[in-house]
Image (cartoon, rainbow, N blue to C red; front, side, top):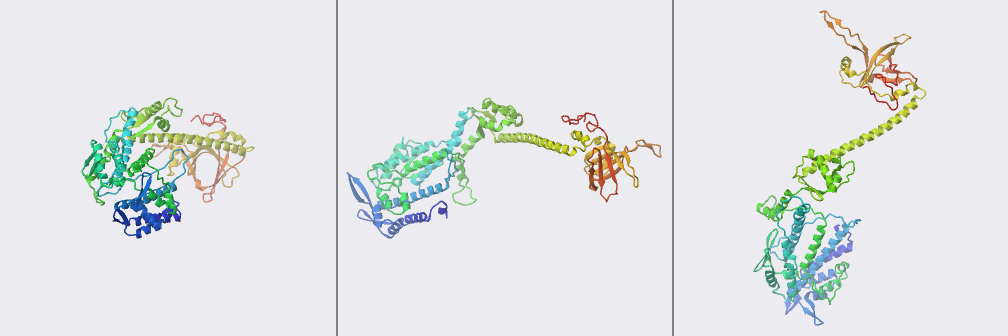
Length: 633
């Protein structure tokens, strides 16, 4: 299913499994030695592998059990001994598995690849270097693993420690340099060409002693002791050597170094595999065999250095983020915490130096123009007017504007040549809060302006609608539309007696309208209307009809005088008891309130004062299109 997802058809999937199965069968091939020539003990594994790869079994045996050597213009077929044949068999297995693995990785990458429109590709990658196999004896494989770890640690040092301090020096920031171990000396010890490192010496021994079956490893160790003996990170002993890595000293056994470093895939093996009609095999071995090519064959160490260099180049183009894994114990047991083991890892992973550099350094740094672009609204000198001076000057203006609220000290902020440095992240958080407050204030101003605009549009439409409604009807009152509506024209809140009547209802009611009006009503059976002056107060719950009472004090039995109330409540009509409100379309000032039948059947009419509606009833100021505010209150 996974192969189908990455775009592999059934034929490719079948070929992949056949190659893996052939590698397993080749691992069962054993050799015996007759004279100086190797012979296959049992042909069953050879036949099974050749059947899967569709290769002639005799051709496969010939490529493994013998080799072609060119001497003085002539080519000789030289038989391999049992040891050499076993190495050739292993070379066939390794080259098949290696190229199949690389091909699968490329297929997965091609399936995940996204077309990029920019010149530089954008991608997110995860590099997991934890969990390598632990060997009983450290040999060439462990040196390769530790070499890659050294290269990655070098990037870590360069990006987190060295580069950090170089930024402060380049920006001329007051800084106390923190010493740390730079593992470049260890990387040079392994990979350097001049003076030659371990890989260079190993390649040289493999090239000069390729025809010798024994003595190459001891010669390699001897040459390392001669050329690298003065290096304080290298120490040799009888059976191998010790390298002082950033994570501690590691002992390596030199036995097998040269054989593991050699590229034992001969032209015979390549041509044998290319004879297969399997399409995937042809795709894995596209090279053209050149018997006249006299160049030195590439070694495993050389290929590893190339791969490590490509990896470092790709990582340097990215913004790396690190997750450091700590191995708590050697027993692979949950809840078991070995303090000595953990302290060793923390020390040699460079975490202590990293923490010291981070603590002594600045948590936030940003170019002046980027800082100004985000926080310019905090200063009136940089917003809303465009700042025309240097970027550093704008940054200084912003910091001065917020200095009183942030309490920024001299050690908290430093200005470099091109960047601003903040010591603690809390200062950045406070800047963000101030920016949010400013943005909220500006957003509120925009909302107020928009609401004012929409309200004015609504008012214009409402005026036009009222003008159409009053046309040829209440035109005498047309100018009353421009009279501001105060609601409480009696200032009830300043009249304690009147408010006492309203409070007697037991509810806190908001006064919507209050004015002295004329009530017109007819007695039962009468044909004429009776008029009287009443104070009308309309609240959010009811309409109050209040009559003015005699305020002359009355005498009581003791001879003292009891003051009378200034007002008397005539009637309270709840708004829920009103059936409807009627107005005449004619030029009058009458309003009729109709009460529900559940309330005693009475109807009363209120007439507004016959003042000039185009003038203020208090200051008598005239209203017009340009003067609509109530200026006297």
